[in-house]
Image (tube, rainbow, N blue to C red; front, side, top):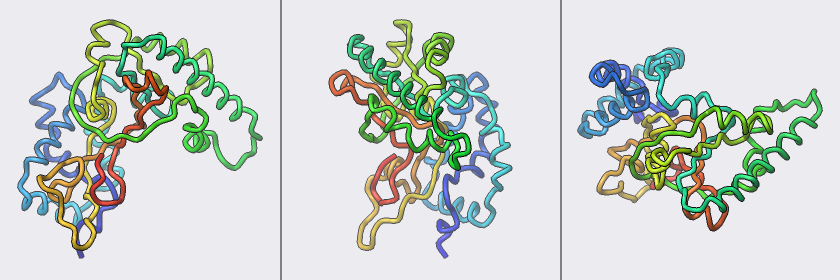
Length: 274
């Protein structure tokens, strides 16, 4: 049996367990996400033979879910946890264009109105409904926030950012209840300069945790892509991200009043990118 058939999801855990501690010791001032990215770079630098050897090892000796959950590479803090993992809402809306404040304010007002409407619908549901509120939020949030209609986009690029003051955001949250989207809207000129034009991949790397999985198998008679691309297929592996769903408000959003849904992983079909 192909060892990859034994893997059901992200599979970098054993490699992280082996290398994460040493990377963390070498770069103590960084955080969890950056340490994971450095380990991922080591993985991508392996030869095809070494990657296959790792595949065989993890297929034969998969780590337990409990050991992964309790590992340092999942429990260590990251500088941006407050606006990602620990933030309210089921998704993160990241503003990356600051050239048209009027357009942003129109969009943000529509988003808040849609979230308030969604919250009102949830609170009026029967208390003994079989579906809990969290499940409702996961399934209904996009339609409840029509102001944040989206188009799916692939990742690509690199950058860095700071977020606006969480206390400012908390005031907005308290005004309308728990938001569907946690809005990251940089306040200072320096923060906006770092955030403006940030790529989808850079946003994922800042607010999600990197991992890797087996890439989908190409259809019979189809060759693997060349040159290898880690976001699609790199020696049979694909870079993926875990964390809250990420939406981007960019320059185009000023015109169409939509945000872009960033893909955390490729689709099941071969050739689709993270």
